[in-house]
Image 1 (cartoon, rainbow, N blue to C red):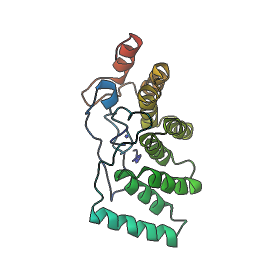
Image 2 (image 1 turned 90 degrees about the vertical axis):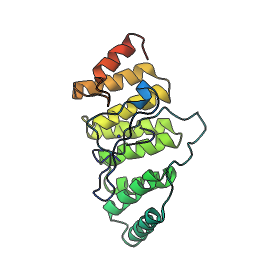
Image 3 (image 1 turned 180 degrees about the vertical axis):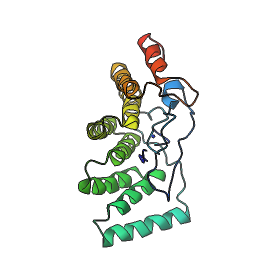
Amino acid sequence: MAKQTDVTNGYVKKSSLLLACLISVTVGFLGGIILSAYKSRSAISLPAPVSGQKPAPSQALSDERAGVIEVLKRETAQNPSNIKAWIELGNNYFDTDQFEKSIQAYEQALAMDPNNSDVLTDMGVMYRRSGQPQKAIAAFDKAIAVDPRHETSHFNKGIVLMHDLNDREGAMKAWADLVRINPLAKSPTGILIKDMVDKLKQGGN
């Protein structure tokens, strides 16, 4: 989710059990850009939902997935110090759009490892998708403080600033920081993030 981990319908996965791929661009240029190098569930790809409204769950909770969640719930109850189980539980809730439960599981993991930038990024995605963009930004900022080169956090921060908080300047700065980290970062269509930032500076969308 952030395994190195992706934005509303997608972010990078950490475990071999539930490895996720970035979703393709579906809505708009800026809202759909995903870092080509990012292989996690954690990169935000869709524009923000209407303020005050939560998106409906997009993934059905299959019997198999429900079984995995129950196993992880039992494991965390019996062995609350099993950080990997907490992260996997959070990841499963992430993948089934159970935002609050995912956040709670990630919080348990972060209580034991507060410097896990991937988990911080995934939690930020969950905050964003649950309609809490300010908390999402705070989570991305923490991830960046832990790892200033965490590309997905910079990217996601720009998405939330641009589409949820209408902060164009802040978004440009977040993406400019990303370009400084990786000047060759591109969108799935091959457009350099640098060119995207330049276009914004010129007043484009």
